[in-house]
Length: 201
Image 1 (cartoon, rainbow, N blue to C red):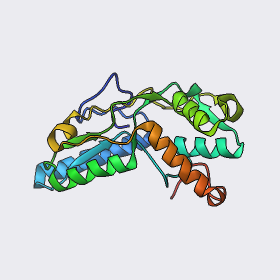
Image 2: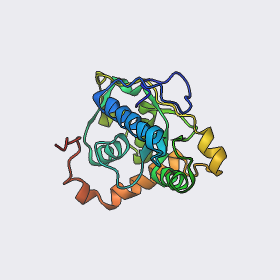
Image 3: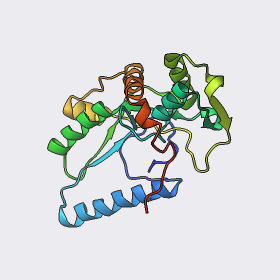
């Protein structure tokens, strides 16, 4: 989110344009650490990752929330009709890239971790409806967009692919099915957990 809304695929840089307080805090942290690297050779590498998902994710995130609501007959709100575009990456692929960067990344360098597939939030939720056999209209209410929500986050991951011979291996459809299995296996427990973001002071 440090880049704000991206126009096409963006490469690694520090030309930030954050549009939310959260994004501003992330940009500030990167700039702070870069100042340590420039002044004291502090051994830092930066990773910026596309939308991570997978089994075990907090329920306020779009994929587990949609799966849980579709499975239990609850209705979820889809901000702005879900037209914003994202690239979703499975936690196992993101972790694999992160470990390679941790062990062998160039100090002071930045790496994007992302798939090359894009999907709108609406299409993602429609895929959830397909795998759970629930129609989109039966579990989704379209609402106004959230303040400060960016239309697209698209990170060019060519650098990490070339430098570390890394590639994402888990397709979005396979990842959705794996996450669905996790939801189904833990449904009783998941229904006792909060479904909305809870700020930790």
